[in-house]
Image (cartoon, rainbow, N blue to C red; front, side, top):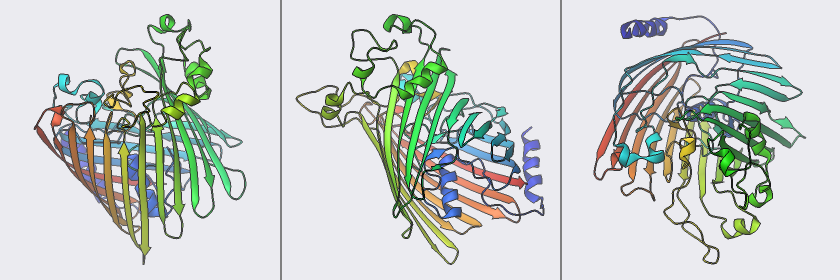
Length: 501
């Protein structure tokens, strides 16, 4: 079976087809890498850096063939690739994507097949435990072998789009981590209403808004819902500024819902959608049926709220972005004022493009912190300095889907620093990145340290052909949160895509 798939790969690698080149068609990289690719091809730092998926096809009809072959020796080290997880040993991936669009319709269908042995390194679940079992190098989720990925239908009327898809999502301005929703898990079946393209108010001001509901089942087969709202305001001035916020909810038809709240019906997707427009402070919603009686608006849901700013200096081709988030719902304004830094997480990043004589140089640096706050108001104290925050509720499988974290891939009580350099031109780019992650910094006795080196080379070869090779080396200290245990992982990935249009 594996020999047959390798023959298919070789057949397409030597085929030459005489049609027009298009550098903007997508291959199954992680979404952060797709952002970097489009930055290199368009020299526009924040054109795509807000909400995914984005739609940038240059032709009404395109068909793309993708064939990948990868090999891992060690623990799984794939982050932000959705369905394209790889187990230890040889992995083969093949897909065809069909894309059609006009001014009111967008359709994408991509059947895929994965061939591998479904083998993962086992870790001590007593040591890993809770949300850390869903870190990609510990998760023992079963890889989906075939089906449809990145597929969906969107209809647009008067600038408002309605759609249903299993696209991976990426919410926020960052390139390496997303606190709210990332492309790390498998694509979730999602209903969407909002704007695909930003709506202009005048020559200097535009906006975008998006709402989604994703129904799914927990490990215990409870009906759960991920609902989210994103809004951004774009000021097309010098410098260009994007201001935005994201609001995310995990809710569900919990078995004890009627006993802990006044809500007596089954919880539905429509109920989950309405949460997006509820008041910000708990005391303003204490009369809602889904809150616990006798409390200042406590509810069983898991809410995450973030705001961000993204600034681009067009002449210097530099952009700086900052996202600040909290997973704590404040009771009132006094609570917010006293505990403004409680459960505060953030992402800070910088991008720079340099272009001369067709040569392109890209630099990106980003830091994520999901560590508990260190400062507390002694007059209005609550919480502890080592309490876990972000992705901590077991009823929602610690904000995971099919064994993989929906938010930042570094997980609860973590931080992550990444630097990336890119060099090349419009036909060929090489990227080198280095990242350092810490997991369970304030909640684990022996928190993990992860160092990763990644080298990727993208090449547009001949006509309508794209090939890439990616190598990653990863080393984790205190692996499995066990003192002095070290795990190494080496990963090599070959990919090929061919565009018909």
